[in-house]
Image (cartoon, rainbow, N blue to C red; front, side, top):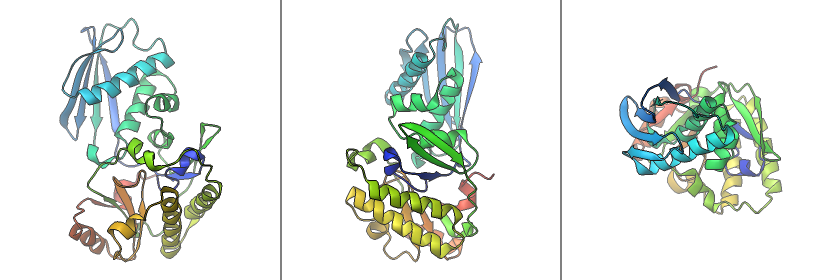
Length: 294
């Protein structure tokens, strides 16, 4: 999500980009009478569980916290489609994730999308029931191009857009060494307020950003957006807190305080990478190395 964080929950327009990384789900029939689940992360086994098919009660697992969330997803998928895994003699499910789970770039949303596709139910409703988020990340899991996303009367409104910043070689995504729980991040956001003027400003920034042709103009839009969200959350911008000497613009992404930031600077890639490494942040992606090509 490049724009609209937090305020997308109130109907603001968000510009979002699908990434090169993803999660696949393979389902094979078995005669076990169970749902046997395995998750592989970057080729290594991360999670295993056996579920009873009657009510998806976990029989065995190596990760109780994850199995609880997965059970909720499966139960809600069945509520949305009562025929899901009924009269089934068993299956083996393998979920394959090709990125570091700590990056916070969509392991939950891609899982929701995959389970909904498998269960033939609405992924946005499934996501809302279990995670209560805006659903923009579900849209990204289902699209291969940049998109505009907003909620209208609580329902997702999505349109694919052309977003080809001619200065993409000056854009970098930097991991802040910690995964920010989106639900925790939203605790500082007051959902009872209307934020009418802030939403109007963010909407205008989002539309300008799509067609922006200059790095300096893009940097100014980043600064404006950061100022708006900082005032909404009653906090300082991330650049003020962590990177005051960075010779460019920095934008928080998603829930403020963790995961990735976007850095925009008129500098060689090696200089940007060295700056953040000296600050202790080793994971720096160039724009074209993380955003899905289209």
